[in-house]
Image (cartoon, rainbow, N blue to C red; front, top):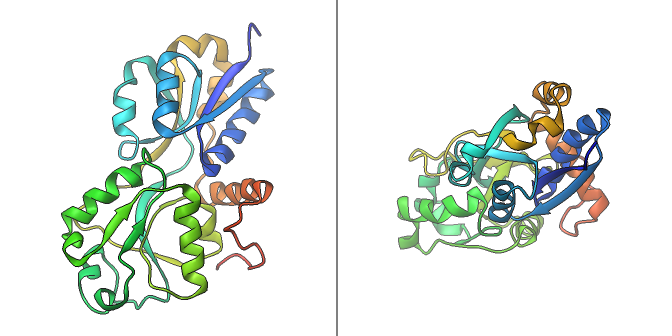
Length: 254
């Protein structure tokens, strides 16, 4: 090989988990791998300027569509690894009549729901779409507000709230390891502000296809992980990282 393949992923644990599986396929074809991670905008920019050869993975068409549009002529989709979705969710102990984002404006949610909707870092699809949802549903008039933060801000607040059985709305996504630990209910989004189900798509730069090779590309084209496996792999990545918000003393939900 003339040089290592540069494989980039967005700097979140489930993207790391999926990237490891792609890298295993590439290594089976004799490639050395130079892996890197960066926030959403930075990683798509790196792909666009040729700083990485492959990206694992773009959520298309909804969550990462704007980033993809800027580089679409430079890359080719290789495979869809899983079917992610950006969602708002509540813990399952919140009464069953709270089934839609619209229900946040009615009792019992209006009486008890925490008004802070704690997000993760800017640039993620859920972070870009959640403020739009607050305005589209008129939630701001009732005191609801979205704030960006880190991934640990978002998920750590969720775990703490569940431990105290507080009513909370979390701007969330699937796949994510905490779905194996917590029982969450996806709120309906009748205005479709949060988009729909995406395809987690591996992208390769067209000028790197010869370096990757036809046989490796063919094997990648047959790679599909699915959401449950990515959630399991995400949990394993988090175990290695010892993320403080994850309670591994509890058995998986379901």
